[in-house]
Length: 148
Image (cartoon, rainbow, N blue to C red):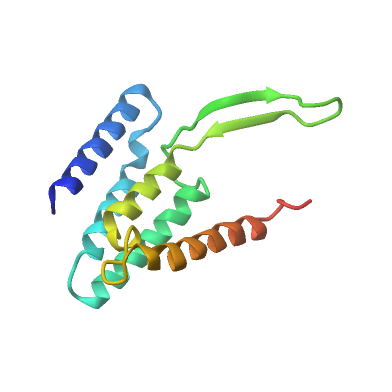
């Protein structure tokens, strides 16, 4: 691994240690985090089947974290029981800090997401970003209970 990866892993470890010390993260999240480490190691392997297993494992863990099924991540409450108008249900908003964790893992394990090395920045802007926006908007559109 090159130096920027070690720096990113250092800050990731520091953030996880701070979250653990302040109570934002419990020890129950360690299996999910160790699964992410195993997925990152598998993605870097030469064998095609190991890379495939690593990507499938990462996607499964990402879905688990995104759907808030993984125990141990205690999101801080940003807005607590605020009623916007008369007769409305109270609104509670939480800061889901596990979502940036997944983004950091995507950048660490799949560095080709940042820039397609052979095609350059133009290919990244023309292909990867629209596909990412389509996936995000499609996921939001398909979310149950989103539209009434």
